[in-house]
Image (cartoon, rainbow, N blue to C red):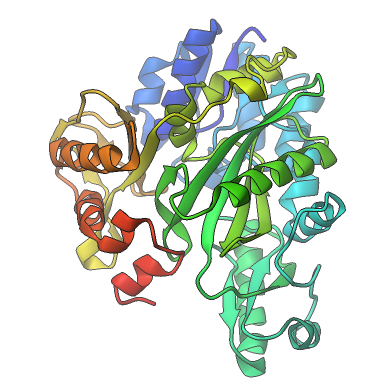
Length: 445
């Protein structure tokens, strides 16, 4: 590849710009009218305006992005996460235009992006799945499936992600109502209203395995991340290794992730997500892209995952083998959102009047903020990530407290105070928390 266009914005776009520079290829930023002053636009080698602020007219506009690639002679596109990152039509359009898509094939995205189809593939790879249905087309079919699975059940969008299109039903009446609601939400969010059911596990952990595979038959796992600290199915912080699973469960889960990767003939970066109940684990979905929380893994193992993505997309073999992937110490990532935790996490866009970021040993900040930058109200509220490493979990927690106290973002409300509170909670300090813990703590569960 000779030039990479980055079909994204914010901190992940800046992250990819930096990886391209180290990899030795020029980068092209795209931006909406609302992002003209964004840092990723300043740092890239070139930048192209692709439309007005609404994402549907800019960052989700396939034709505009491909036109920008043609205009700048970019022969590769990195989608980042969100927006078009898991859009099989976009990956196919890149291929048809003679542009390398930095990610899996359109066929793999389609195969794994449909959650019901992914469940079937996991079964073929002998990977445990949560008891459920392959798909339901009506409330009546859902009732029939729920009677077989057993209540409570979770209604999920087949094309879903980000917690959208998900409902929990404890009985038949709730199920019929929830199926209709979930179908409407899924159609609005993804253009696909197909649903499936899963047995609802009351207090599971959410643990995911990072994988990477090249075009030369090499597939490796890069250990797991704990992602159970969630609010409304949105992750708040992640850590690695998981403090709540046994070594045996960890090994079995990572082996299962590799089996599924190979069964799907998958290439590039991906993340396989599991629910863990005691020593049992169940596949729930595969994210066919780089994750928000990929820096946790990078801090733990010392491998640049975005540069590995570029290497694989260029046709090169992976730069590391499974034997080289050694977990070292402990890492925690805190998602910094422009939200007010005291006002039910109301978004808080606005101008950054002053900014001080933490530093020192084992501290990394992935952010595209700068003093004077105006956060637009049109996009996700994630504005940065603080990633902290320690020789063990105790040092990582203590270092995190210090770093969060140093992190000063003025002019808006952020989730930094929430993270400081979480560090003092006994459930977090002991590592004994599950996916419902934070909502119970906040009185929402």
